[in-house]
Image (tube, rainbow, N blue to C red; front, side, top):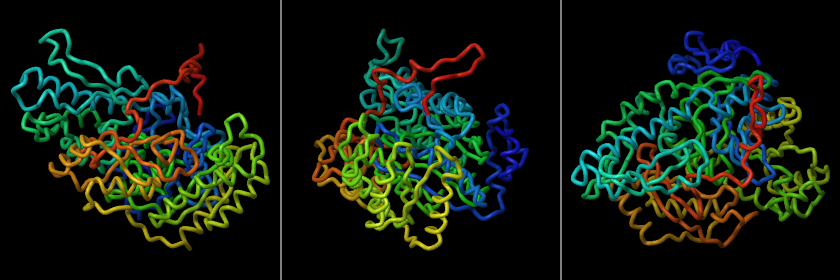
Length: 546
């Protein structure tokens, strides 16, 4: 690894705006972007087909593409999310790329990094403490209705036993007993606010708009009514500054914020993206999971804020292994050559191609190469892409680093220059909330209809009555299927999307729609990754899966 000073100097960061965390990590003062005189760079977004246990390599592709752009003479940087401790110690593993396309120092980034996740957790739970403190001193006659508190607590760990708890038992001195629970930090509205705020002032204003519950008369109660936003912003004062690290090929990488895309909006912070755009000609960002989740939310939530531009191009990552999995092949047979499964599984990729075309941005499909890919299977994939037709490129950044992504990088530059760019949102904000849900479900997921109980519809009507009907929707559902049923592989058709609950994230600026069996606090698998992680006598951490 190069000293972080050298990486900062390489991209034009002033020494006085660099706060080092050791020799390989740093935070960047927000004044750096504010003082930039150069025109902003162009944004490239990386998404993927529906994820499988075989792995797609979306983060790896984003990192390798950044290196590839630098190799062919462009000034490029990556803007990525911070990993959550839940997946690191659970099932998914770390999120720093793989092979020769990684950001480093990987173990530091996957664990505590610069403390941002802890700051976000603390700010969220401070508000929860202030809510319960108000209940304790006001009892049942105060500002808040103790039977309608919507603000839960968070923890950056998979811990299913905390999903639903009873707090405040033990007598009057312990507060008012009530049912509540924990979500994972990546699902926190504070995390979403952290990633959508354009600056420190906007952050504090958004924190003040958080709705924590209602009055006894049913009116929303905001965090600002509890005088919470100042102290919460104080906890986030250092965290809000973007983190700078590097790839294995010494490309600058801004890693900041980490909302999940299956239960949140799934993109790194607006502040980090804009910082990168103020310094580089090309910025590669990654949206969580597949096009139906992270990419749709990036367009309809993040871009809609007006704080970041629409991407100049979109890269849609696919693998032969994932195509075969969606074509009905089991995990234990993915290495075997199977042309029919590739053709059948391509139907899933075809839907994601269709999804990205809705937004009118130049598109390139990247086939992330695996050693087990048979040449004839790759030929089948190429023929299917030509029939779409869609631009495509092979990518071997895992095995060759930036060199293995040069063909993809050149395809992106060509698409950006020659292909039509007519960006549009999926729906207007004036559309009623139910129609927004139906639009995403029908056009992006392919659902035939949407079903919800009367109590959910009443919640939607209440949100609209309270003045929040013009917000975009952030649909929380399984990442493993285009539908809300994780076992429905390929391209499900004629299904009904089941909406189970709805909640308001007024500070973040969207309405969360929960579908199917989605959980805002994941659980650990039967054999969690934590059982294989260790630290040796020299203090070196081992066992974190990339």
